[in-house]
Length: 391
Image (cartoon, rainbow, N blue to C red; front, side, top):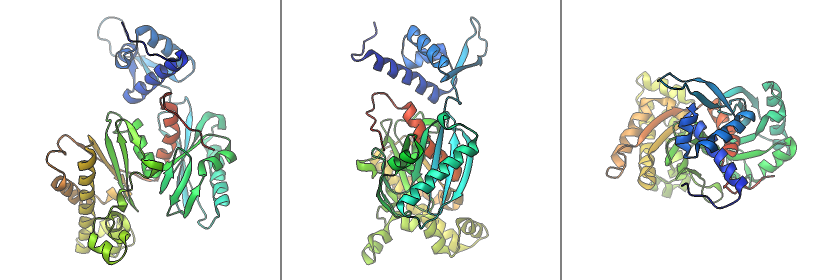
């Protein structure tokens, strides 16, 4: 006999629907039999819920599987057109935008300039106008969207929808989600940009089958996102994951400022460019390829610092998966080989054994898609999670 769960019947049904949707999201196409086995629900419950999900266009039947004798079984999939999400990655002078479907596939992408000298009210109005333009360019009606997700660098209180501090944008204590929601009339979610990538990996990427993993990004800065025990870990008021601000050169930090000895200041792309004398990472990589010793050494040193930081994160968190992402991984082996060597050298004992390492470049489209995933996450979120509305 199945153990009954005490509580409201509607809540239990909502939980079971959520379980089926998340199982299909994680596994892809499944037969009803497979879905029943993986969900551990009864055949009757799965049959009833699947019928409702098909009728409501959340799920569709995608044809028959390979014949192995007996009755042929049709496969169930999420309906990619069940709804759409908007995602904005906000930078100092431009905004990149993505429209994704229910499976986080990008259906429309665009870029817009952003005036860096706007006051806060004008900044929000500008973002709202960009959203309206993106919706118009997508060819979709506004009711088709679940909402808007916004990713930006800094310390973000995602539960309250507040940008506590964004150094690149010069924002402090700005209730961005609520302000945008008032302009747009749709749900708005905001978070640190690295968290948006981490959430995308958790729901749709390499992290879907891992309960404990980290994403470390390198580019203009160095950041980290964490999924611990199956949940995105954000810390108190969204401050977790500021890996780039850890001190890795104590002498340098003592001589000048603490930030001068930080991981970000010594290993991010601007540090590499400054050390080698080039104006872009692509130029540094080309010079290193052509035999420029300074360029090679700048990338090697950057990779070594990153590897030490990764070893520290593994020693503390013991994840089963490490994803290294961001524009900076395009430097290739000049940076990545020293990084991996240092990570192996400085990880304690056998904590690296069995850890999957994934190198995954990220571009503007990837960041915008990540922001859209903030909205999709709300659809897949368990009904048991106490969700605080913003705005």
